[in-house]
Structure formats: structure tokens, C-alpha cells
Length: 216
Image (tube, rainbow, N blue to C red):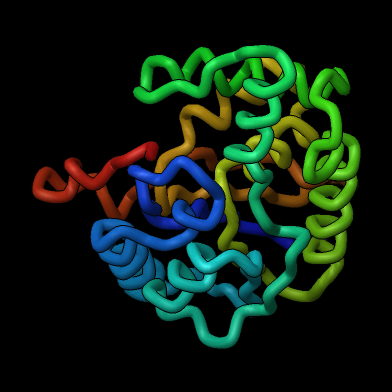
């Protein structure tokens, strides 16, 4: 079993209100990824394998980091949060928030409704999401040598949920905390992968870069 480091993509289009419009990095998102790539090269992290989802923001993050030919796997893609939010509004009258404060309340409510099966005809079920994440991580962990994986915050929160046995509200709090281009490391301990690093942004800690510690 091999060590896996998960990376959330760089800042995307924060003004978007649908999946397609959101799926591209902002200028700051590219810069965050370049800084992360330089940090990993400077500290000589020995990643022998790289992976990413198939979304544009994943590919752009990997490219700006300087990752060479990552394996692209759609199982590493984010949930369709905008789609779920629209379904929740259409079916239950829960308004889609327009600010950060509203989003903090909306995300756990959406996760709970989705997990409980209260959203009809979602793009995928919560159980399907759980399964694809577990399967993808197990396959990567079975490979030889440390791996780095560029993905999204919702997926990372699911990985943490599975590793730590979190309930849905706790998973939502994890998702809300995750910063753009943050590092999250899973290390084999016994027969399980255990979190040994969460939400680390060493490449953004310098005073002149702290403005780039973004969540959205």
C-alpha cells in the first residue's frame, strides 16, 4: 500500500452559478498551482505517479504545477454541486445562496438531503459517489510508489469521511475548510490509509502570499 497526497485544484471561476462556467481556473488559481509545483520541486517530494480528474480545472491545475502526463480518471471528479443545489431548490424550495455565509449553511443541508435520498434524480447517488471514490483510492494505493492526485474539495472530504468514519455534518465541515491547492496526505498504517496531513498550504504561508489562501 502506497502513500497518496491529494491536492485540491486552484481557485476556479468564483462568479459561476453552474457546472460548466465554474470549471476553469482563475488567474490566481494558476498562480497558486505554479507556487505549489515550485514548492514540491524545491522540497524534492518523491512522487513517482500522478493522477487527476477529467475536469478542466483539474487538468489546468496539474499543468500549472508542472505534473507530467498525469493519469486522468473521471472517478476523481467533483460532485455536481450546482446541479444538486438547483434540484434542491426546484424540489424543496431551498434557495441557492449568493454569498459565502449562505453557502456555509447550504452545503451541509445539501449533503444531508443528497445522502438521505431526498433529492430526486440526482446526477449520481451519494452511494455511487462513495463507491467510486473508495474504488479509485484503493487502486491508486495498490500501485507502487508515492502518488499525487489533483482533485476537488468535495471528493477530498469524502476521502476524509471514509478514513475517519465521519458523519455527514462533519464531512460538510471538512469540505468547507479545504483551501485551493491545499495538500492532504494519506499514509498506510497497518492495513488502512490514515490521514497524516490536512489542508496544508506551505507554498502560501509567506506574508506576501497569504492573500492567496482562498476557499472559493
